[in-house]
Image 1: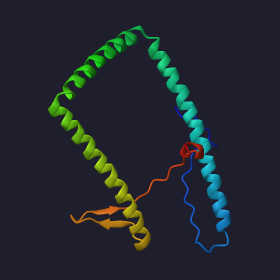
Image 2: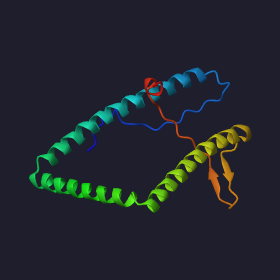
Image 3: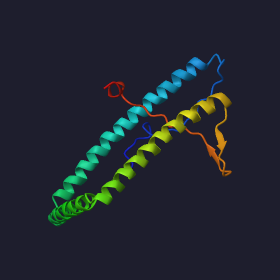
Image 4: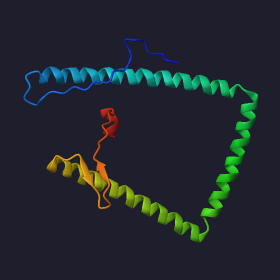
Length: 154
């Protein structure tokens, strides 16, 4: 179901202006307005999604068959969690779990370092691609994300 009116529809746009362009200020203002419009649209969509999810959850909770199956599933999940805990407490499995944690942490750290290296490589070379030793050409991409300032200062 499409709940957006024609005025609210999202429009993909590419704004391109050379650095020395006298219209750069206007382009920047237009881009800022486009960002603000998208933020507003996303916020409205999130509110609508929350409302729809609540309605669906309510419909499920009011169904007797679903409620019974959900209770059975919770009991089964609890038994599964207890079994998993017992198995992971065996000495050899504790070691394995620690190794998994350690390797995952190493990968996360290496990914962070790689991101920094790629940013510097792109800044210095201007290249947006790099060929790995196995001959695969990979593109350097960045994902921008907007977060409320107060949430980052905690």
